[in-house]
Length: 441
Image 1 (cartoon, one colour):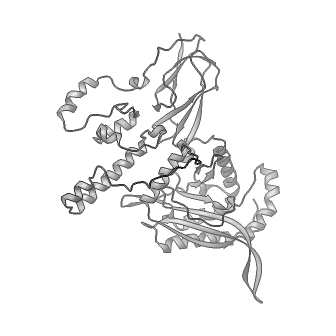
Image 2: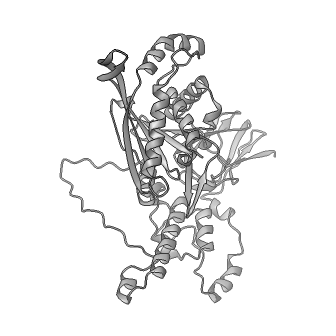
Image 3: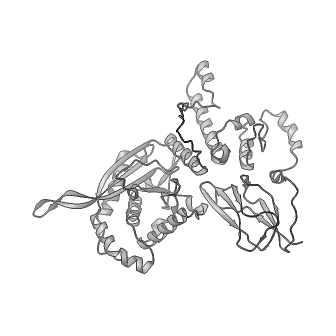
């Protein structure tokens, strides 16, 4: 009987596991090539996995909501059209784990190291193979692992949760070692359990509606809090004159859309100016690793995109400095459309080096964005408004109606001081205000 094994695909370089959010087939269903078999979730992206072959579903080895390591067999398809019944309630996680657990027990019991975390704890909490491996290597006990807050579905601990816990634990230990502490201080704030501010008490009245955060909102919330904890946030603002940009775009937009089949907004023009300024000030296009600064050679622009359910996602224009204005427009539109239709690939939200958020699309004039870690700066673009402004002319100063727009940049004060942050923002505005209105696209 010819069979085909469907493998959990590797959706990106740093993706080690994925959650099955929905099966679209069951055992005995006939499928043809490219029929959707299941939907999986990695980080913020949900992806549909099609069938690579035609046949009949013989086995489904994992259930909905299970976390599966990449490369694992998740389903079997009979190529000759015959269905094979699956034994009741298989435990696929056991297939991916090595059998000789009993042989390891004597070694663990003789050592001081805690036992490896179980796939499911006594509390019923599930741990993926990757999380269990990290816990074992870092000698994290089961009780300690059970206490780590999880950002996954139903509070499940994911890779970033345990790594963040280890970093916090390491920092706490260093601070205790560096500063002589009294026994009372050591006992009140042990290194393994860093003190946290208690959440304020919540009062709920009869008319209040309680809404459970979805998976994406939990990830966004954790990412934002972590960013404020990691970086020293400072925001600078200025107002730029974008009259020439507005007039030029209004002049060419209809012709461009007719020729290219794409709408050109103001954002690609601003991206072009930001790219030029990043080349002038490469420190803004960097990340921090401990006491090291990593200056990125590639300029990968993350663009914050609002989603229909009031969530947001940040697809990335890779090597944006290699694209001209038309190329930036096409790639920006493609990624925005893919984001809103839930068709982004995991690689398309990774490896950003600098982020842009456009408050102006909602009619907001100014804002103070939060840095998208591990980057060190983010720029916000406000709405364009007509305002009276003083212009210098050979005949003297005059008041004229101009198109004005606020730009704001939030940067990490650990490595970017006010002078650098201010000069970068001013340079972006200078490139915008010096826009060549005679150019063609």
